[in-house]
Image (cartoon, rainbow, N blue to C red; front, side, top):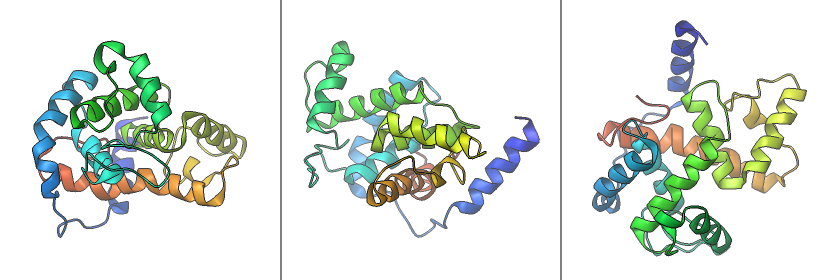
Length: 207
């Protein structure tokens, strides 16, 4: 992708982002800002999109360490018990003692899992690649891969999430499909700009 195409892509994404001047970072987020920034840079590097990860926690749990969903997802990162045990075994040095209700553990686990997914998806740019990552976090990597494969078969760009793969359903129920499609959009296009504007660092779609 050349420079003019990247610039056009940023403009198109910007047009999709709703006005957020009225929105503010919730007070519940502020105690975790330093920890999230430090851990994100440790796992992702110094250019970690901290605003994206803050937006993800905002969407997952509204920064509540004791959050439990109706289907049993736990903690700030809303991990299901099976995912908690899997990620703890995958990164034993960092996550061995599985503690989904511990904010520091939950943030580390989310960042490691995001990174693991990010390394297994592609995107036309960082914004689209993170959208694939978030779709996988919410609904499973296998579904994201099947959606991309079906998109390619339909002549769509399988590396572009927005207005391409996000329009395809490889077999999920309508309710699950709709939830999964709203997830990246809320994080990247609604919540991320709020944290970016508040100085939490760059985001996948804001830099």
